[in-house]
Amino acid sequence: MSDVLPDEARLAAEIERLKVAFPKTRELYREVCALLFFRFGMTPTANRLYQLVRRGSMSTPTQVLSEFWAELREKSRVRIEHPDLPVDLQAVAGELVATLWTRSTASAQAALEALRVEVEAERAAAQDAVNSLQANLARTETALEQRTAALLAAQVRIQELEQAQAAGVATRQALEAEIARQQHEIGARDQALAQARADFSGELEKLRDSAGLAEERLRAAEKRALLEIERERTASARLQKELDAATSKAEQGDTRHREEIQALQIQLGDVRHHAGVVQGNLEALRSSNAAHANELDRLRLQLATAKLNQTSTQKRPRSSGEIRSTARAAPKVSMRKRVAR
Image (cartoon, rainbow, N blue to C red; front, side):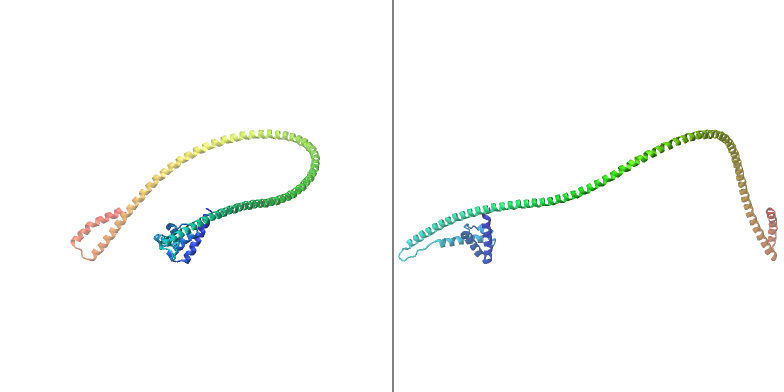
Protein backbone atom coordinates (compact mmCIF):
# COMPACT_ATOMS: atom_id res chain seq x y z
CA MET A 1 0.00 0.00 0.00
CA SER A 2 2.90 2.31 0.71
CA ASP A 3 4.23 1.65 -2.86
CA VAL A 4 0.91 2.45 -4.60
CA LEU A 5 0.04 5.64 -2.80
CA PRO A 6 3.04 7.70 -4.06
CA ASP A 7 2.27 6.65 -7.73
CA GLU A 8 -1.38 7.58 -7.26
CA ALA A 9 -0.34 10.90 -5.77
CA ARG A 10 2.05 11.63 -8.63
CA LEU A 11 -0.57 10.54 -11.16
CA ALA A 12 -3.17 12.84 -9.59
CA ALA A 13 -0.69 15.72 -9.60
CA GLU A 14 0.17 15.13 -13.28
CA ILE A 15 -3.51 14.94 -14.27
CA GLU A 16 -4.21 18.24 -12.48
CA ARG A 17 -1.33 19.79 -14.39
CA LEU A 18 -2.71 18.40 -17.69
CA LYS A 19 -6.19 19.77 -16.91
CA VAL A 20 -4.68 23.23 -16.74
CA ALA A 21 -2.55 22.76 -19.90
CA PHE A 22 -5.28 21.11 -22.04
CA PRO A 23 -8.71 22.64 -21.44
CA LYS A 24 -10.29 20.64 -24.31
CA THR A 25 -11.78 17.34 -23.17
CA ARG A 26 -10.58 15.06 -26.05
CA GLU A 27 -7.02 16.43 -25.96
CA LEU A 28 -6.98 15.97 -22.18
CA TYR A 29 -8.09 12.33 -22.47
CA ARG A 30 -5.43 11.68 -25.18
CA GLU A 31 -2.68 13.15 -22.99
CA VAL A 32 -3.87 11.10 -19.99
CA CYS A 33 -3.70 7.93 -22.16
CA ALA A 34 -0.11 8.74 -23.11
CA LEU A 35 0.73 9.55 -19.49
CA LEU A 36 -0.62 6.23 -18.20
CA PHE A 37 0.97 4.12 -20.93
CA PHE A 38 4.38 5.74 -21.36
CA ARG A 39 5.06 7.36 -17.97
CA PHE A 40 3.47 4.96 -15.48
CA GLY A 41 3.41 1.74 -17.57
CA MET A 42 -0.33 1.29 -17.05
CA THR A 43 -2.79 0.07 -19.66
CA PRO A 44 -5.43 2.78 -19.98
CA THR A 45 -9.11 1.80 -19.96
CA ALA A 46 -12.21 3.87 -20.61
CA ASN A 47 -13.45 3.46 -17.01
CA ARG A 48 -10.05 4.35 -15.56
CA LEU A 49 -9.78 7.42 -17.82
CA TYR A 50 -13.24 8.65 -16.79
CA GLN A 51 -12.49 8.15 -13.10
CA LEU A 52 -9.30 10.23 -13.43
CA VAL A 53 -10.59 13.05 -15.69
CA ARG A 54 -14.31 13.28 -14.83
CA ARG A 55 -15.22 15.26 -17.97
CA GLY A 56 -17.66 14.67 -20.80
CA SER A 57 -19.68 11.50 -21.19
CA MET A 58 -18.53 7.86 -21.01
CA SER A 59 -18.40 7.68 -24.80
CA THR A 60 -15.70 10.34 -24.97
CA PRO A 61 -12.92 8.32 -23.21
CA THR A 62 -13.97 5.23 -25.24
CA GLN A 63 -13.52 7.07 -28.55
CA VAL A 64 -10.29 8.74 -27.52
CA LEU A 65 -8.89 5.37 -26.32
CA SER A 66 -9.73 3.74 -29.68
CA GLU A 67 -8.00 6.58 -31.52
CA PHE A 68 -4.98 6.27 -29.19
CA TRP A 69 -4.57 2.53 -29.87
CA ALA A 70 -4.97 3.05 -33.66
CA GLU A 71 -2.44 5.86 -33.67
CA LEU A 72 -0.05 3.77 -31.59
CA ARG A 73 -0.29 0.82 -33.98
CA GLU A 74 0.19 3.13 -36.94
CA LYS A 75 3.28 4.67 -35.45
CA SER A 76 4.72 1.31 -34.47
CA ARG A 77 4.51 0.11 -38.07
CA VAL A 78 7.84 0.59 -39.95
CA ARG A 79 7.84 1.28 -43.67
CA ILE A 80 10.92 0.37 -45.73
CA GLU A 81 10.79 2.16 -49.04
CA HIS A 82 13.57 1.30 -51.52
CA PRO A 83 13.36 1.63 -55.30
CA ASP A 84 15.07 -1.76 -55.86
CA LEU A 85 12.68 -3.79 -53.60
CA PRO A 86 9.31 -5.01 -54.68
CA VAL A 87 6.25 -3.74 -52.89
CA ASP A 88 5.46 -7.04 -51.16
CA LEU A 89 9.05 -7.33 -49.93
CA GLN A 90 8.86 -3.80 -48.69
CA ALA A 91 5.74 -4.71 -46.69
CA VAL A 92 7.29 -7.92 -45.32
CA ALA A 93 10.50 -6.08 -44.47
CA GLY A 94 8.45 -3.39 -42.73
CA GLU A 95 6.50 -5.99 -40.76
CA LEU A 96 9.76 -7.70 -39.79
CA VAL A 97 11.34 -4.48 -38.61
CA ALA A 98 8.13 -3.57 -36.79
CA THR A 99 8.13 -6.99 -35.15
CA LEU A 100 11.75 -6.58 -34.15
CA TRP A 101 11.06 -3.11 -32.82
CA THR A 102 8.02 -4.34 -30.91
CA ARG A 103 9.93 -7.24 -29.40
CA SER A 104 12.85 -5.06 -28.52
CA THR A 105 10.49 -2.53 -27.06
CA ALA A 106 8.78 -5.27 -25.10
CA SER A 107 12.13 -6.61 -23.93
CA ALA A 108 13.23 -3.14 -22.98
CA GLN A 109 9.88 -2.58 -21.27
CA ALA A 110 10.30 -5.87 -19.40
CA ALA A 111 13.83 -4.94 -18.40
CA LEU A 112 12.56 -1.51 -17.40
CA GLU A 113 9.73 -3.13 -15.44
CA ALA A 114 12.19 -5.47 -13.74
CA LEU A 115 14.45 -2.54 -12.98
CA ARG A 116 11.47 -0.55 -11.71
CA VAL A 117 10.40 -3.48 -9.56
CA GLU A 118 13.93 -3.82 -8.24
CA VAL A 119 14.12 -0.08 -7.61
CA GLU A 120 10.72 -0.18 -5.96
CA ALA A 121 11.85 -3.11 -3.84
CA GLU A 122 14.98 -1.25 -2.84
CA ARG A 123 12.93 1.86 -2.22
CA ALA A 124 10.44 -0.16 -0.15
CA ALA A 125 13.32 -1.71 1.79
CA ALA A 126 14.81 1.73 2.28
CA GLN A 127 11.39 3.02 3.28
CA ASP A 128 11.03 0.13 5.72
CA ALA A 129 14.46 0.91 7.10
CA VAL A 130 13.52 4.56 7.38
CA ASN A 131 10.23 3.62 9.04
CA SER A 132 12.10 1.31 11.39
CA LEU A 133 14.59 4.05 12.14
CA GLN A 134 11.75 6.51 12.63
CA ALA A 135 9.98 4.04 14.94
CA ASN A 136 13.24 3.51 16.83
CA LEU A 137 13.72 7.27 16.95
CA ALA A 138 10.14 7.74 18.16
CA ARG A 139 10.65 5.05 20.80
CA THR A 140 13.95 6.65 21.76
CA GLU A 141 12.34 10.08 21.93
CA THR A 142 9.44 8.63 23.95
CA ALA A 143 11.89 6.93 26.29
CA LEU A 144 13.89 10.12 26.50
CA GLU A 145 10.76 12.13 27.22
CA GLN A 146 9.73 9.58 29.84
CA ARG A 147 13.19 9.68 31.40
CA THR A 148 13.16 13.48 31.24
CA ALA A 149 9.71 13.53 32.87
CA ALA A 150 10.91 11.04 35.46
CA LEU A 151 14.00 13.15 36.06
CA LEU A 152 11.90 16.28 36.41
CA ALA A 153 9.53 14.44 38.74
CA ALA A 154 12.51 13.19 40.73
CA GLN A 155 13.91 16.71 40.94
CA VAL A 156 10.52 18.01 42.05
CA ARG A 157 10.29 15.19 44.57
CA ILE A 158 13.83 15.98 45.78
CA GLN A 159 12.88 19.62 46.22
CA GLU A 160 9.71 18.61 48.04
CA LEU A 161 11.72 16.26 50.27
CA GLU A 162 14.30 18.96 50.92
CA GLN A 163 11.52 21.39 51.81
CA ALA A 164 9.87 18.74 53.97
CA GLN A 165 13.24 18.01 55.60
CA ALA A 166 13.78 21.71 56.28
CA ALA A 167 10.26 21.97 57.66
CA GLY A 168 10.90 18.83 59.73
CA VAL A 169 14.13 20.30 61.11
CA ALA A 170 12.35 23.54 61.97
CA THR A 171 9.51 21.57 63.53
CA ARG A 172 11.96 19.41 65.49
CA GLN A 173 13.76 22.49 66.76
CA ALA A 174 10.45 24.08 67.71
CA LEU A 175 9.40 20.85 69.44
CA GLU A 176 12.70 20.66 71.32
CA ALA A 177 12.25 24.27 72.46
CA GLU A 178 8.66 23.48 73.44
CA ILE A 179 9.81 20.36 75.34
CA ALA A 180 12.45 22.37 77.20
CA ARG A 181 9.87 25.02 78.07
CA GLN A 182 7.39 22.41 79.22
CA GLN A 183 10.09 20.65 81.30
CA HIS A 184 10.86 23.98 82.93
CA GLU A 185 7.16 24.52 83.57
CA ILE A 186 6.85 20.98 84.94
CA GLY A 187 9.71 21.67 87.38
CA ALA A 188 8.05 24.88 88.48
CA ARG A 189 4.75 23.05 88.80
CA ASP A 190 6.39 20.30 90.88
CA GLN A 191 7.74 22.91 93.26
CA ALA A 192 4.37 24.63 93.37
CA LEU A 193 2.71 21.24 93.96
CA ALA A 194 5.07 20.44 96.87
CA GLN A 195 4.35 23.85 98.38
CA ALA A 196 0.65 23.34 97.78
CA ARG A 197 0.80 19.93 99.47
CA ALA A 198 2.51 21.48 102.49
CA ASP A 199 -0.04 24.26 102.59
CA PHE A 200 -2.84 21.74 102.14
CA SER A 201 -1.58 19.67 105.07
CA GLY A 202 -1.60 22.78 107.28
CA GLU A 203 -5.00 23.81 106.05
CA LEU A 204 -6.25 20.23 106.54
CA GLU A 205 -5.21 20.28 110.18
CA LYS A 206 -6.90 23.62 110.62
CA LEU A 207 -10.00 22.28 108.91
CA ARG A 208 -10.02 19.24 111.15
CA ASP A 209 -9.86 21.46 114.22
CA SER A 210 -12.57 23.67 112.76
CA ALA A 211 -14.60 20.58 111.93
CA GLY A 212 -14.40 19.43 115.56
CA LEU A 213 -15.61 22.78 116.78
CA ALA A 214 -18.26 22.88 114.11
CA GLU A 215 -19.43 19.41 115.07
CA GLU A 216 -19.81 20.46 118.70
CA ARG A 217 -21.68 23.57 117.60
CA LEU A 218 -23.83 21.38 115.34
CA ARG A 219 -24.75 19.09 118.23
CA ALA A 220 -25.71 22.06 120.39
CA ALA A 221 -27.68 23.51 117.48
CA GLU A 222 -29.42 20.16 116.98
CA LYS A 223 -30.47 20.12 120.62
CA ARG A 224 -31.80 23.66 120.34
CA ALA A 225 -33.50 22.78 117.11
CA LEU A 226 -35.15 19.72 118.68
CA LEU A 227 -36.44 21.87 121.54
CA GLU A 228 -37.72 24.46 119.06
CA ILE A 229 -39.33 21.72 117.00
CA GLU A 230 -41.07 20.33 120.05
CA ARG A 231 -42.36 23.78 121.00
CA GLU A 232 -43.47 24.38 117.42
CA ARG A 233 -45.17 20.99 117.37
CA THR A 234 -47.08 21.81 120.59
CA ALA A 235 -48.06 25.23 119.24
CA SER A 236 -49.05 23.62 115.96
CA ALA A 237 -51.30 21.13 117.75
CA ARG A 238 -52.94 23.94 119.69
CA LEU A 239 -53.41 25.98 116.57
CA GLN A 240 -54.82 22.95 114.77
CA LYS A 241 -57.44 22.55 117.50
CA GLU A 242 -58.34 26.22 117.24
CA LEU A 243 -58.47 25.90 113.46
CA ASP A 244 -60.78 22.89 113.70
CA ALA A 245 -63.10 24.81 116.06
CA ALA A 246 -63.10 27.87 113.80
CA THR A 247 -63.73 25.63 110.77
CA SER A 248 -66.70 24.03 112.52
CA LYS A 249 -68.13 27.46 113.40
CA ALA A 250 -67.56 28.67 109.88
CA GLU A 251 -69.32 25.61 108.48
CA GLN A 252 -72.28 26.16 110.80
CA GLY A 253 -72.41 29.88 109.84
CA ASP A 254 -72.12 28.95 106.21
CA THR A 255 -75.05 26.53 106.52
CA ARG A 256 -77.15 29.14 108.26
CA HIS A 257 -76.28 31.73 105.61
CA ARG A 258 -77.17 29.33 102.81
CA GLU A 259 -80.57 28.69 104.45
CA GLU A 260 -81.17 32.42 104.84
CA ILE A 261 -80.15 32.99 101.23
CA GLN A 262 -82.54 30.30 100.03
CA ALA A 263 -85.38 31.88 102.08
CA LEU A 264 -84.56 35.30 100.66
CA GLN A 265 -84.44 33.86 97.14
CA ILE A 266 -87.92 32.37 97.69
CA GLN A 267 -89.22 35.71 99.00
CA LEU A 268 -87.57 37.47 96.08
CA GLY A 269 -89.33 35.09 93.68
CA ASP A 270 -92.67 35.82 95.33
CA VAL A 271 -92.04 39.55 95.20
CA ARG A 272 -91.07 39.31 91.54
CA HIS A 273 -94.24 37.32 90.80
CA HIS A 274 -96.38 39.86 92.66
CA ALA A 275 -94.61 42.70 90.83
CA GLY A 276 -95.34 40.94 87.55
CA VAL A 277 -99.01 40.67 88.44
CA VAL A 278 -99.10 44.34 89.49
CA GLN A 279 -97.28 45.29 86.27
CA GLY A 280 -99.89 43.37 84.25
CA ASN A 281 -102.73 45.11 86.05
CA LEU A 282 -101.03 48.46 85.51
CA GLU A 283 -100.68 47.76 81.79
CA ALA A 284 -104.40 46.80 81.63
CA LEU A 285 -105.35 50.02 83.45
CA ARG A 286 -103.18 52.05 81.11
CA SER A 287 -104.86 50.42 78.09
CA SER A 288 -108.31 51.08 79.57
CA ASN A 289 -107.45 54.71 80.33
CA ALA A 290 -106.14 55.18 76.81
CA ALA A 291 -109.42 53.77 75.39
CA HIS A 292 -111.46 56.09 77.68
CA ALA A 293 -109.35 59.06 76.66
CA ASN A 294 -109.93 58.27 72.99
CA GLU A 295 -113.68 57.98 73.61
CA LEU A 296 -113.66 61.27 75.52
CA ASP A 297 -111.87 63.04 72.69
CA ARG A 298 -114.40 61.72 70.22
CA LEU A 299 -117.34 62.91 72.37
CA ARG A 300 -115.79 66.35 72.82
CA LEU A 301 -115.41 66.59 69.06
CA GLN A 302 -119.05 65.67 68.58
CA LEU A 303 -120.08 68.21 71.23
CA ALA A 304 -118.11 70.98 69.55
CA THR A 305 -119.66 70.06 66.23
CA ALA A 306 -123.14 70.12 67.76
CA LYS A 307 -122.55 73.52 69.36
CA LEU A 308 -121.30 74.86 66.05
CA ASN A 309 -124.38 73.49 64.29
CA GLN A 310 -126.62 74.96 67.01
CA THR A 311 -125.06 78.40 66.67
CA SER A 312 -125.52 78.41 62.92
CA THR A 313 -129.12 77.29 63.37
CA GLN A 314 -129.96 80.10 65.83
CA LYS A 315 -128.75 82.73 63.37
CA ARG A 316 -131.30 81.66 60.70
CA PRO A 317 -135.06 80.85 61.12
CA ARG A 318 -135.56 77.21 61.76
CA SER A 319 -138.15 75.08 60.09
CA SER A 320 -140.49 72.84 61.98
CA GLY A 321 -138.50 69.75 60.95
CA GLU A 322 -135.24 71.18 62.24
CA ILE A 323 -136.90 72.14 65.58
CA ARG A 324 -138.05 68.52 65.98
CA SER A 325 -134.61 67.10 65.10
CA THR A 326 -132.95 69.45 67.55
CA ALA A 327 -135.37 68.40 70.26
CA ARG A 328 -134.57 64.73 69.57
CA ALA A 329 -130.79 65.33 69.58
CA ALA A 330 -130.68 67.30 72.86
CA PRO A 331 -131.26 64.33 75.19
CA LYS A 332 -128.46 62.38 73.46
CA VAL A 333 -125.97 65.21 74.00
CA SER A 334 -126.86 65.49 77.66
CA MET A 335 -126.49 61.74 77.99
CA ARG A 336 -123.02 61.87 76.40
CA LYS A 337 -122.00 64.63 78.80
CA ARG A 338 -123.03 62.46 81.72
CA VAL A 339 -121.01 59.53 80.32
CA ALA A 340 -118.02 61.82 79.84
CA ARG A 341 -118.29 62.99 83.48
